[in-house]
Length: 118
Picture 1 (cartoon, rainbow, N blue to C red):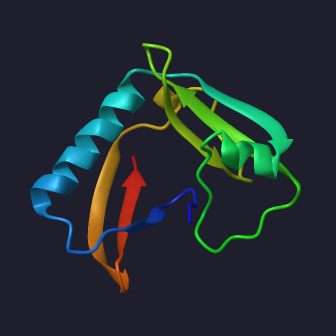
Picture 2: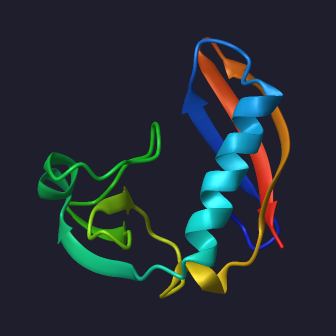
Picture 3: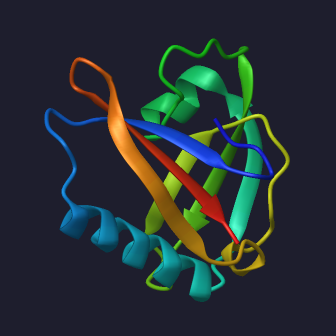
């Protein structure tokens, strides 16, 4: 769940995410933002996107044709590939600095991270 003011990300994780793990996530995200990697958008068949490894929001329903956003790292490997319907950037550097605000339980085996980009 993403808005211009905040991000809410639910992840499968069986236990509380430690402060060290949260700092590591922030560092990885901020490194990728600083690398100003290209963000590629394609409209493709939903089933093909999922076969190609695109991640989908838990519980979301997607049409037959979907937007897939892919971030390719500096070695040419896929860093992220996701089904998504919102407006996006063309490069990661447009986003700014990622900051985790809170981590909490959201359900059995699900952790919720609240964050923002400033």
